[in-house]
Length: 361
Image 1 (spheres, rainbow, N blue to C red):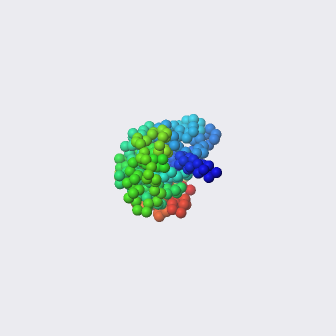
Image 2 (image 1 turned 180 degrees about the horizontal axis):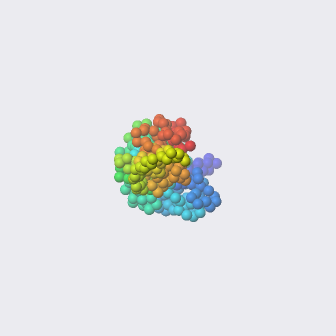
Image 3 (image 1 turned 90 degrees about the horizontal axis):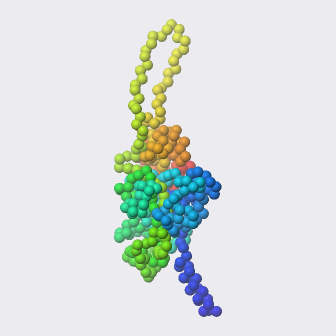
């Protein structure tokens, strides 16, 4: 009986060590997170198929991961047509951004982020040319790895992680694909893990340093070890160094209108109504449409160049009458408001004891 119990326990532990972990990119929202929140089970143009296993993308046909029949490289709506490109966030070149990850079955490891300005035509080669640099673990203070600066290591067995990464200085584009990649370390150790964890005083969530080192290169399809997960988010990155201006369709400068002076008749039938000359709101030198309530969008074909077009856009946009809020330290949409106020028009939404986020009402 005892022997049977010991054998059963051994089998159970071996089985548990190979159970699949799960996780995903929460903010900026990954395509699978959008499908989780906005997906539908009926054919609806512009809406994706409902995703019930948003955290299960440990198989990959290209760069964005897949689960069952949902391939997020294809990213089709529930009618079978390509989903429209909708940036989940707008950042500035070289900006330090917040990345929120949720792990539902923890197998240690680390997060890597890459980006490509080619939208739907993005490739892994392009992504690898634009790695993001890990800057800070906001919640648990896991340190940077000087030998692998693109890694954000996961501390202990928590569910939510908020990390700061820096965008590459050479990355700008209206349609930037952000790749989130979670590499686990419960089956083998990625190179550099022994050095990293050995040098962390009082570290939390130490991986099993007696495991063998993972063989390189890792698989691109998700088969073999280590287990990996892929997500993709759609973002825009503007050239902050030159100012967040919105490209506009050239507008012909208005000519000065001079009302001719006419001698009044003795009994004028009616006095003309005095009205200020009004010009279309697209003539404004400063006003612009904004997705993040702080910066101007750079694609004039997305939500237009006028206030009316902006506010009637399918995305929840905001009109900035004086242009980008460059001189304000407010937090933009989807940024943290834990220690700073949100930009006007946004609300600070509580997420957990460590993190709150600015969102549109």
